[in-house]
Length: 235
Ligand SMILES: Nc1ncnc2c1ncn2[C@@H]1O[C@H](COP(=O)(O)OP(=O)(O)OP(=O)(O)O)[C@@H](O)[C@H]1O
Ligand SMILES: [Mg+2]
Image (cartoon, rainbow, N blue to C red; front, side, top):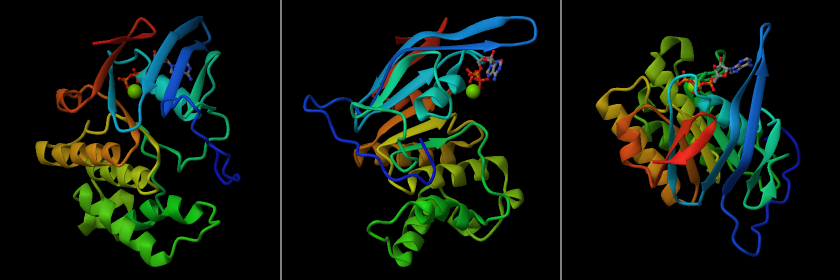
């Protein structure tokens, strides 16, 4: 995933490769005292149109896995492909992320944060500003924070900020959406809104991978995986 590069060609392979495929992912971290292998050959497939959940105890490597899937981090071994194409150079509007650390721009309002990926996206076919405003309003409404559009992130609760960050991730209509604990700070009504949005994104053709401890997210999944001992196993 790269910011500001020319969009690479992402052609579906003739045999309809999955939207996202990870094979044999390994990731080691070295600390002052020791080296520890967190991922030991993790495999994952997410097809277009499905929600895949990844659960696992705290510290098992879920966020590490998402960083490798999104291209924020590089595996020590293994591969990630999008529609059969290598992950290198996949831009953020093809693979979008809701990170566990939300990364909202503090100097921008909520609406400006959500509009940012739409405005930064290279525009061979420019998207009219009206459409951007409409898209921003649509996704903020979908997660129940439309009335906070003109506030700054510091003026929001963490759960509200989390929903703005999710709106920012889905606004460019990515074909792969990776979300880290999307309901961790939400009440039941907000959780329902977030789950409805994830389902909508999947129904529109994206592959959604959700890292979660929340049974409500697992309930809406099409495929459930657990990260245990550095590998992913089907539930
Ligand atoms: N850069 C790093 N250097 C050293 N160790 C790291 C690094 N990043 C992650 N780790 C270690 O890798 C392990 C997995 O971390 P990770 O954040 O992926 O866990 P997680 O499953 O997402 O946990 P949680 O459910 O608490 O969010 C942890 O033991 C963590 O300390
Ligand atoms: Mg985590």
